[in-house]
Image 1 (cartoon, rainbow, N blue to C red):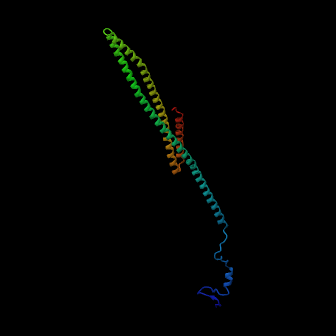
Image 2: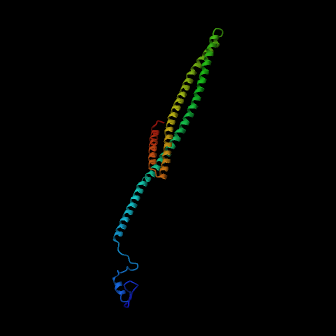
Image 3: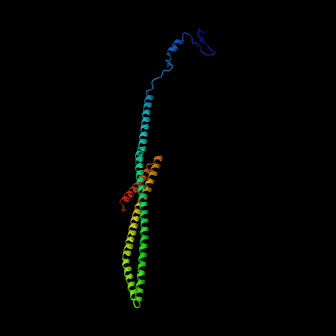
Amino acid sequence: MLQPGELSLAGEPALPLLGATTLPPLLAALPPAPLLGARSPMPEEEIETAELKESVEASVEHALEAEREKTGWTVYLSLSTAIIAVFAAVASLESGANSNDAILEKNDAVLNQSKASDQWALYQAKVIRAAVVHGESEFASATNPELAATLRDEGAHLKTEQAPLEERARALEAQVEAHNARAERLLERHHRFAIAVTLFQIAVALCAIAALMKKKPLWLVALIASSIGGVLFVLGFLAPG
């Protein structure tokens, strides 16, 4: 016979119903539920988070250090570019000055060569006239002694004029050679400075490309080119002018 608070199915033993007398002991046996919003302590996750934070900070610091090392040479790149540009400007100025001086020397050589040619032409005229007068005096000596004497005097005077003309012509030719030689030396200096300017300009262009592309090898190539240009720059000043 069923007691109050029990439930029986066909062929099954009677089961007690949950009532006011059975709920409190069951609730007391359950573990306490966590409060809303409360977090249980997780020491392992905190350790892993700290390690991850340290790893990230170390990676960031390493990346920043690598970036500083990568871009630190750009300061020297800018400085070297400015110095190369100054040398290029001076070399360009010297190249133009030597070229102009060489042109002036060539002009003086041409002018003196023209003067020397005039002196040689006058000298040849005096020589020819003296030879003609000598022949006339020899021909007139048998028939007209007075005319022959006059012609001989004129011939002697022509011969005395030949020597100064020859000396002036040779002096002008010497000046022509001197002007031509100095022009060649100035042109040699001009070529050295011109090549130096070309190398300096190439170096400046390479420095600009290296700065844009952050390629340090290009900067090193620019330094090599500018070094060669610097040698020619110094040799240009040491060359005789």
